[in-house]
Every structure is written in structure tokens, then in C-alpha cells.
Image (cartoon, rainbow, N blue to C red):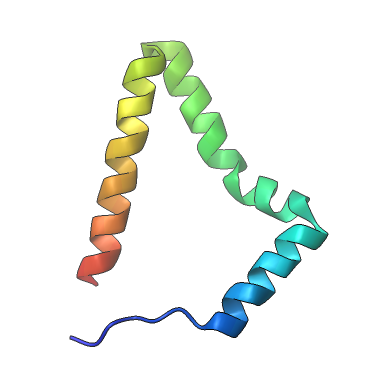
Length: 66
């Protein structure tokens, strides 16, 4: 199975776009922050943190499989 490589030019372009307009990054991350805040409010900080870590691991593992 071939490895997926990160294109250096695309990565640098993305970083430059975020440097020029941090609002882009904020808009991208905002839904996850809202969900984290609601789970924190309902279940507590530590459970919200554990859930976030588990979902992050699942997302990374899922990307590695496909």
C-alpha cells in the first residue's frame, strides 16, 4: 500500500493562508470547540477531554486505514 505523502508546497500555502487570516482556522475549528463545550457542560471536563482524545484517535486510525 503506497504511503500518502504531504505535498510541501500545499502545506506551506496552507500555513501562509492561516498566517494571513487566522479567522479561517477559527472558522474551521469552531464546530469542534462548540461540541467540546457542550459535552463539558453536560458531562464534565475530564469526560469531555477523554471523549475528544478517543475521537481524535479514531479519526487518525480511520485515515490510516483508507
